[in-house]
Length: 169
Image 1 (cartoon, rainbow, N blue to C red):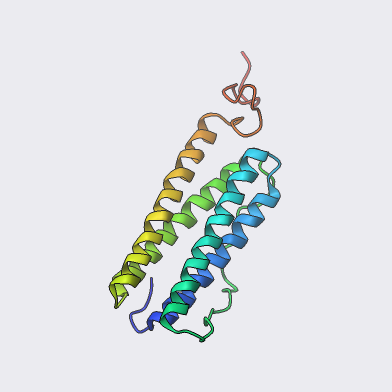
Image 2 (tube, rainbow, N blue to C red):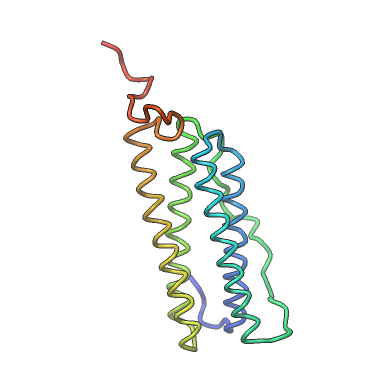
């Protein structure tokens, strides 16, 4: 949650940091994936985070031409992405982590929109909140898919086949 004592430029700096951290997390998740489908999904999220960062930096440049964005340092206590490869719990954990991160990002941008002093800033933050809401919904759907069909990302010929660990009668 944002505090109300931040200036518009400080809010933009915090938002830039959030997008930078998000892109780094998704790049880390993508590098751990053995499935090309899962890797491509996280790479797409990296690209979108970078686009959001560029949008925020452009807005900062509009508000304060020639002034550098004051981006806070990353938090040392920031949660790390779920570990491992994308096998079994690893991919499920990564999707769960990503979906939760997108939900938190949406909440952050809704708070930022509520504190925005000008209509353009408010609309920009609402746009980013909506984009993260879309990401959250997509990742929740992918998480549900992987719960139902554990081979959805690792078996393009038969993603519906039952998990190998099921009890054989």
